[in-house]
Length: 183
Image 1 (cartoon, rainbow, N blue to C red):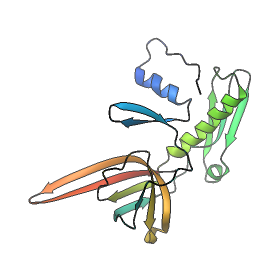
Image 2 (image 1 turned 90 degrees about the vertical axis):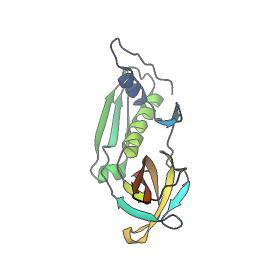
Image 3 (image 1 turned 30 degrees about the horizontal axis):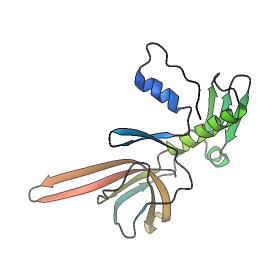
Image 4 (image 1 turned 90 degrees about the horizontal axis):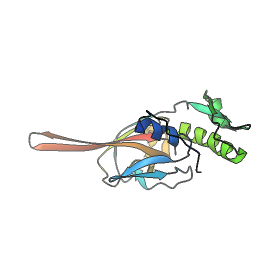
């Protein structure tokens, strides 16, 4: 997609960048000193597994309501919508966008679908705490197996990674906390 876009006088760079990304299904990921656009596909395979070979210290899994389950997009003389019945069934609301730069129905449909996908990816699905796995990155898809929580190879997308290192006397402890989201 190559949307028409205007940066207005007085716009802050971060706000202009955020407005531009709202039009795309892509997400921004930092890799070293570069920002990389990636599109999170819902059929990605897991790159690592927790619970069986890599012990879990603690796990919080939630089934949070999505922000949007129905997206309506109005363009220049056109209209499109996308619906996620399972999200609507769990109480998700509607997202409405007016964008006069949309001049084709195909782009309006893509924008509506991107709104629903972004709403799904931004939801909080929980948090996993374990010993560090140094290759873990934001955006990776992982499998979680935790029989007491009823999870057997459940897939999640990593939304955040935090490493904590504590030195207490001669003992030290390193832990990694992963934010979890929908694949």
